[in-house]
Image 1 (tube, rainbow, N blue to C red):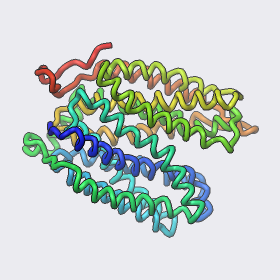
Image 2 (cartoon, helix red, strand yellow):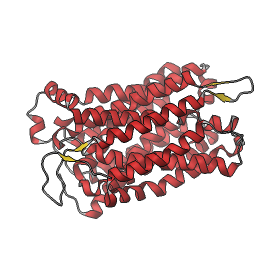
Image 3 (cartoon, helix red, strand yellow):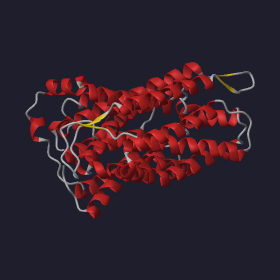
Image 4 (cartoon, one colour):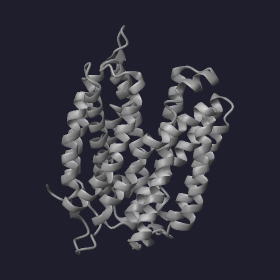
Length: 414
């Protein structure tokens, strides 16, 4: 594990969080731009759905393929390469003249961006000791909050001033700056000595067949699926079922994103001080309440709606902080790059499948109200319960810096 001075460590984390911010904003900006794409390219809602889903599926497929060779590469060079591919793909999005060109560009951006995101987590696992990794993951997780409260409003404002091309060009500009910054800030992270000696197929077999790895993969799958069952229909259901005025929809993301921006680092610090398993369990139990309430929402005052949605976003994003800290520690450092690539692939594919499942469960009635959402909510609750069982059986596979434990130690016990 590489040690960095604390000030350099913070600069590294802020840079990696910025990388995640651009990747998340690139995905999130697509959904509000749907009407413009359908008008500009004359496509149907189904075709627009392909533009959104291809991003996740491409990230999943290339992420799995990258697992074969990721640990044989210098982490810094790998991140520069894949993030550079993401920037090129995003530039192609901005310049796309038709639907098929945009579909191809989204495939490239999703594939390279997804792998870049997995490398970010691998670098955090390599550089930040386990005792401080919760706080580090909290910093990385603020990228989602910033994308919600800053990225989306700025992107939509630029779209209104210019066109749908503008947000993608903004991301390209930020991406170029980040490539230069990463080249200067990221330490050299050569491949682990044992990783280079392993055959790629043998290494992948080890990654996929380890029972502890399988539990980690199952954990990220149920966490991603539990969120993906609720998020796509959260705003439509608040408008049609809970009767939130459309003019106030932005408050869901402004308040939710702003709250998670503050709470994610806080939860990370709590996880480091009181135990990652303990904080995860509490956050999961708390998140179960707004999950069920959102799925069964009836006409309510605005303040009640915003309280429920903000509670959901805070607890849902918060549970990922200790979970990712434990997942990165569930693998030996020599396998971490390939493991995190596969982990990211499974996360993307699970989210895509859960979104498809939600589409089958959810419909609308003659009055436009969302129906079937409670079924998606109860299924998400099952995922939440499963995550607690899985993480309690996850084992930390790296030594801490404060003691000399055996090669594999049990996770904390509440």
